[in-house]
Length: 444
Picture (cartoon, one colour):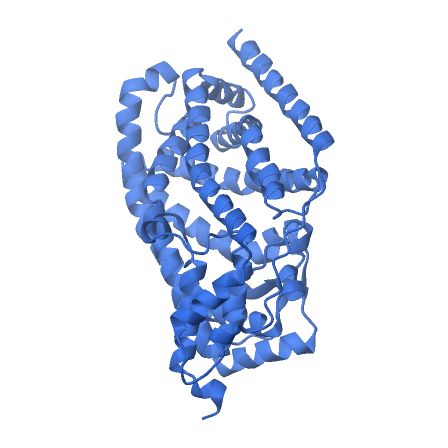
């Protein structure tokens, strides 16, 4: 009877999901344009002269952003701060529902009827968990990732293609998440006392493997990647690469404009799969100087070994996280495990509790995680300025990135919420660099 009740409730969730799907599709509006003014002219205060002042130059660049654009990017960023809290609370409510209504235990029971092979139990449970939580989280997801992005002019997809990407993400999560969950529960069954140590090791190895495979096998699921062939763009970039000892033979571009108006570039992959990619919004909206400054930044990530350092940072975090998880699960299951019908740490029904504890840990860790990333981004900024020697291009790029990042946050605000330096600080760093290298621009 309990299984029937669970299935009936799940069916109602599915009906709600599809009702919401068709309703939101029916009322979806065409994407709004979000074209910032093309900053081609260097402001008078930012032009090289014997009286050049970095602060005045920075303020001159910021003054080129219309007030309504500044207000919109501020509102988007500040709303994003609240979304961190709402995402956490919404996820916590879902986890507690699955535990207190014993839905998690019933999904485990259903998985056990499939076969006696425990890894398959775990995988079947994971599929149920992933689908059900995706359905329950769908109202917040569709607001946060679809309607909110369109409201601020940052999205280009209509609802159908957006939903298609969501389904692709669900499929990737089913495969990769299922593999990781099977590995971790296998570790728990094999090492009952020291599972948290070996769990950290397995997670680190799996994360490294996923980072290495993502550019080749995962990212192309969502976007088309092609080699960039325009010599006006490629040759200066490859010249920068050769001058800095980077063995780059190709530059890639991706069709990000099918989803978003955001300009970006990235270094992705690991070892032999590492690559530098520009999105087509950057190519379409950025000047050659902007592109060179952005690529200098991305090369900085490569030369400064930020991917490897990021992996080491993850190693440092995973060990205390799994120790915390070990303590948290032991303490929680002693008090409520019987009520939730969870048999122990090796029971797949414990997954919602693991997710809840993990979300608490990483919410508290947000400022530390952001500070680490922001520090790496600043280092790459400095490397990019020294490499490309395009401070005005870098300032223009910072203004474009300000479409979805608050340009002038307070210091505490930046420390807690920003994983990149603020637009104001990035422009000031570029103008300060220019002030120290005026001879490159005046010829004197």
